[in-house]
Image (cartoon, rainbow, N blue to C red; front, side, top):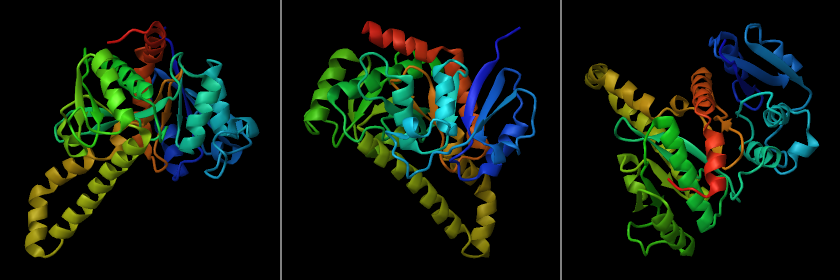
Length: 330
């Protein structure tokens, strides 16, 4: 009999709770047992009994809570109980849509960093103009980073793309204000030198305008720049969709034209729909945690669970620990 994968889901902190409960009640996968964490009044709505473990909690993490202290002050909160189970090997992967700061800080404090990693970073797959995706990190876990941190993001990102997407030596670029090696501040200049010396298939700097052209498999940035880039891509895609809709709804002729290109427009929306890409995961800690959008729906949770399955099946975090602690490079 195959081993059942145990995936934890913190159902609190997500905007549309009903849609998450709907996902839990309707999810079918013989390989997965869902461990669901929430308040009693929310868990009573989870009616599914097969491959479900309900964990009743008495506290909830709020956006106003201090991210650095919540793991000590709210030990019976759904997020904290789930991370505690992850640390104690009750579950294999933890997924939350709650406070990003609290989830990241609590993950670091409770799960621990991989040896040699001082600042874990958030990473996520993003779409490009082609059918390929690229990995962007850091997405905002650390507003400021040192050159060694950026080097570690590159190395960990390569391991992710290698073992999840079977790219033997993923290409890496450093987000910067210009492509020349001399561009950027001291942190970026020093990071460029480190990556050039230690990262196989490092391609140098990339400017923001080239990001969606899929020139490289991984783009590394400080958390401030990475978060601005991520939200800019999300915002432009959303605004562009509204602009296109407005153009096609102007008159009868444009409405007929919309019918002719409807399939293409829907494909564009799907490509830039965050729910299609799972969640952001924390690189540099000892066990996998996945952060989904606060506005996550059934689709977003489905892909986050598929992402969790891939990470667990490949033993990716065990590989990361072994590789980084040995000081190996790709």
